[in-house]
Image (cartoon, rainbow, N blue to C red; front, side, top):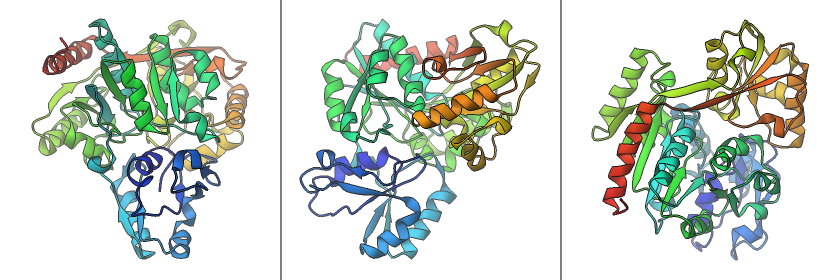
Length: 436
């Protein structure tokens, strides 16, 4: 059971060449248009010469009974415990075992030192922390390669076996979705390289060729695919309590060497303390850093006194569950006259997104899993009755869609105090591995 990421990795590492098992199917959820495809034979290996079919998750009970399935492996993330155990009850009621594979059976081992950056929930701020660590390491003279949690959404997965992103041309070559570009573009802007794809054994070995240190830039609050020598986990006090009630976010807290309680400059004091107390209770030896999340508008005057449409990073406000993100913070900070409700302007699958994520009222998620959906996002923006668009996604949307309205980009990162504390953590790590 997956969402085109962890499921493929678990298969590759544990099941692909394992003659003790026959994998009869993948089931898919969350990501549009994955069901109906095959995991191709080029990736599934000699035990599966015809590949492996993918079905929508809603068919899973029928699949279990038709195929006499013994075990179902649950392999996606960013979920409350009630959701996970609901799936367990459904699977067990159909007669099969419900399996959660852990680090020992799914983590790869690198020949190079690894810093993993993971999180409690999507949208905690791990990407900017990962990039800060990348810059710290590079300034100290080290060759660095980041490896990103998978987003293999292309219809031809063989083209995504191993991907390396170091230029904007690479983004076009691999037909990247908006969600992918949000993670890769910032590395390209830093003249860095970031790897992703489907086969993480091959990806890791390629990254090792050009790096002294590997960064696992985690996604979707999953735990690392690569055994880390240093694990930094980001928690979000805007969602206090999730660090002990979400899977596998709590695992990331329990395993962490360092926990960053992020966004303390915008969160309530009592929520910050809730997170701090929960972390101390389940991982008393972890170093805790209070993280600053900075948000700046490219041109603040374009926002002041205007009616604005706020676009946010898609995963943060959809399955991440946030009602707003950096775009809303920037709009209010810079004196927007009004934040418009985009729902009445939505078209196509954007309407479906608002129907699914009913907590969203006055932000537009930047979703675009294919050309059709990107066009629908473009139409929704152009339909909007506003003066200016505040773009809280970390990419330049004008490169992939044509907006008839002026757009203001929002930049977000970590504060100077957080940079200094991360520098200390990295120096200690380098000293341990004789890299200083």
